Image 1 (tube, helix red, strand yellow):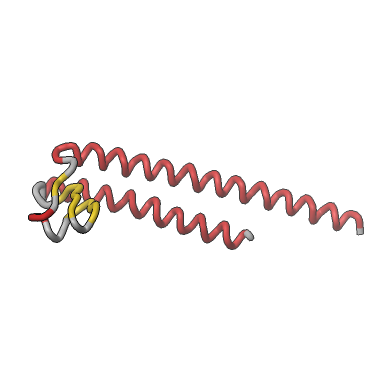
Image 2 (cartoon, one colour):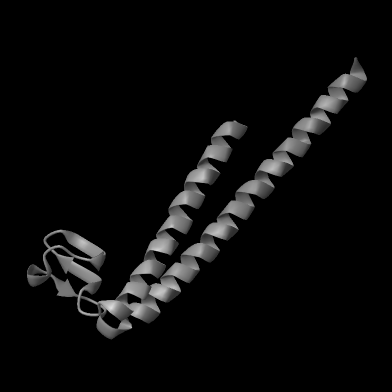
Length: 109
């Protein structure tokens, strides 16, 4: 059970912090390639970053890309941190309970 919780915490951290980092990189790239980086909608679906077929896509955020993606990256990083802290607290409380039960069984023997 603890192995599963640890694996889920790792995957959550990888996804949350990785996505936050990718959004931050997209925001930084917007300064160097303003017409190529953005939030695009088209036949490929929703794309954040650089799209392969710019002629058939439509940019959604325009000049609002930087503030919206900065806020999204920050919120995702903070949300990931809070979720991981919750998982760790829950895991440590279950470990404490298992230790108490183990100590109680040892005392009965």
